[in-house]
Each structure stands twice: as C-alpha cells, then as structure tokens.
Image 1 (cartoon, protein in one colour):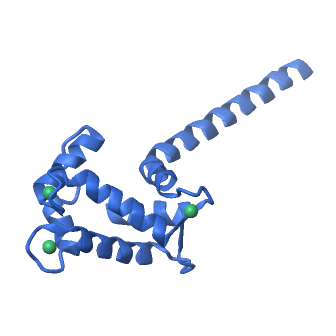
Image 2 (cartoon, protein in one colour):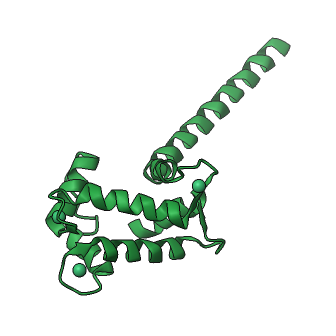
Image 3 (cartoon, helix red, strand yellow):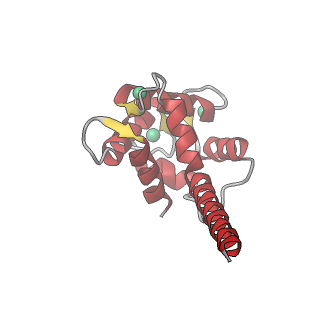
Length: 150
Ligand SMILES: [Ca+2]
Ligand SMILES: [Ca+2]
Ligand SMILES: [Ca+2]
C-alpha cells in the first residue's frame, strides 16, 4: 500500500513538473522576440535598458532596415527587412509597414528618416516605461510588445 502511494505521488510530481515545463516553454516562445531584443539592447547587462541603449538599438534597427543606405527607410525596405529577419512575409494581422511608418512620419512624406525614427522610438520608450524611472525593464518591454500586437 505504501509502495502504491509512493508511485502515485511520484506520478503526480512528474505530471506537475511536465505541466510547469510546458507552461514555461509556452511563455518563453510568446515573449522570445521581446526577450531577445531586450538582451541585444541592454549592452551593459545591468538588466534594464536606458534611453541611450534604447536609442542605440533603434539606430541599429534603422540601419538594418535602410538597405540602400540612403538614410531613409521606405515601406518596401521595412517589409523586406521584416522578411529577412523573420524569414516570412509580414502577416495580414501584422501592421503594414506603411502604417508603421505613418505613426512616426512627422513630415508625412511616407518615408522614414533616421531623425523621425529616433524621435518615434523615444516616444515609444516613454510609453513603455510604465514605471517612469527612465529605464525599460524586461517586463516593461515585453508588455509594450504585447500591447503593440493587439
Ligand atoms: Ca542597461
Ligand atoms: Ca533606404
Ligand atoms: Ca518622413
């Protein structure tokens, strides 16, 4: 009887461990994009992204998107870079590149300059910095991403 109970107990533990593991896994894949981005931006590895680190990360992203290096990012370049980075075409559910540009395109010419992109990412940082300490925590970045996807 004792033996039977022990086996049942072990079975429950195993089940619980498996469930936890798969939950953690699901959460991980959901926030993997934000997490990878966070690690990349947190260049001094202090666990938070400063305004400077965020600006540097945004600049890097801009340069990656600006394929022909003319200092401007067009909707086509943005779509192409999305394909390069993710390996798949932008989904219907994703925001169109033209719409993304419109959000920060202050002079409304449909093209993003480095200045417009920098200003836009500063606004984004302020919006995501819900703790208002001037830094982005991992959680704030993940939450910001989750909000953007809605
Ligand atoms: Ca940092
Ligand atoms: Ca360009
Ligand atoms: Ca513009």
